[in-house]
Length: 216
Image (tube, rainbow, N blue to C red; front, top):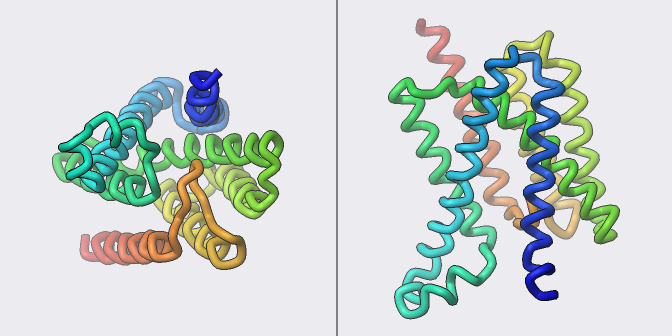
């Protein structure tokens, strides 16, 4: 019985992302060959993110890990490990982009499809099964973002749509962090400072790319 309860959170997340990939295949306007390629890229990104969470957990508990590795590896990851994984993933993507081995906007566009729908399914299960009614605000935000993604993906440039959806997600989560007891992503609590930093990075990224395009 304990093994079942340990497996349940993994099945919850895995099932949500499977639904996210199905949504991507059904709703993305990309050609079939591109969808397959991008699905592989997003899968690689998610695998790396999980590895970075484990690395973050080890770094945050380094001295305990030296004494008793199993004690750290068996302990659930916290939000700080999640933040480090976001940082490491960002550096990894930036490095691949610099080496021109990555179509950044296309990867982000594909990831947004998977992430938004997977998040929606994850939170919906939490609301229905666990009765977590405080997640209704985040569920509503995700529903609005999914509608915008479906309706605008053929009429707005990929870069503008990516930036707009990320900004609204960050702003919505930041508002929820103040209105509700807390804001979460896959069970990880998001601190207001992290969401604020996420918004600032998005704004700076937008200004940088706009200035770069003008110069060209």
